Length: 372
Image (cartoon, rainbow, N blue to C red; front, side, top):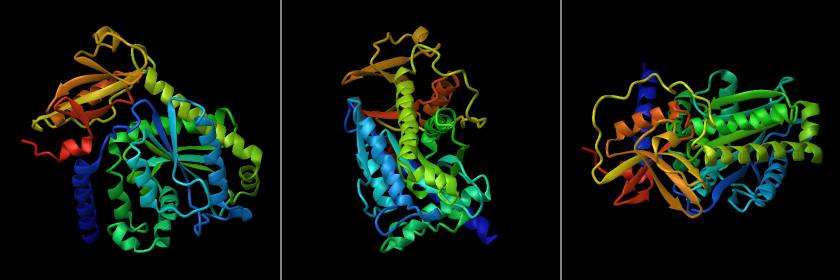
């Protein structure tokens, strides 16, 4: 009974927090697609040491290779949580991404296990589907114990507690589909282009993903404890190939996002959730919600024939891009319904944005206003 009560308290608390703080960040670099690259561990936190290799060193080399290539694209701004062998707290990594108003957060790690397990895994935030996923998340989250005053900074979060793990998954719910999209691109590239053993896209309760307010993935590039794979990841050739897959995935994700208008870039997909939106108004005074369905350099007429039958389309030019929006309402429940409809039409990367007095504001700020 006590466990059930704890579960309810955690879920209710985090759900309330999600309404107050979960946001679709407006990038501070309007003309740039901002990618935050996070090399796991660092400094006195070596990560795992399977087969004598250091996770912190391999992760950093892969991240720097990814960043070096992405920086050649004038439309992309790259920000690193670390570029050398230093320790960065989990909350510090998330803060770097949030302060940058990043479009993507990509965290790179190496796996370990006391078996012959091998292969790549890319995680998005969610409930651990099995004990193995829980153990991976638990291991990565335990880095908080290396931080001074971790009890103060992590508000009672316990990596060993299933209740804590359940609660943190609520925060990233708005970005789950986009995160899964990137994760699939990463794993497909590992498997198809690099011929690596892909263990697939998975969900688990990683704290660093929970506290980033943008699409986020955590990539386990392989198992250092599997001797052959550890040697591959520790080699220049292996690091080059793994970084190439991550680069390809990020560029393809951005391209899909830019071009997700006027054509069937995505196949028609079923409704993401069978849950019906409650038929009750949730009005936010002086706030207008819209669903952003695309951003592209292409200037299209905001007519239904250009947007798979969706009506009430508006657009705004920001720098060299046109942003396209579906719907316009002060009712939060109605905009959720429209977002679901847009995703059913194939705009799987669509998301809710908020405006006040004609100016786009953070969704988290809009949700702090009093609703009728």
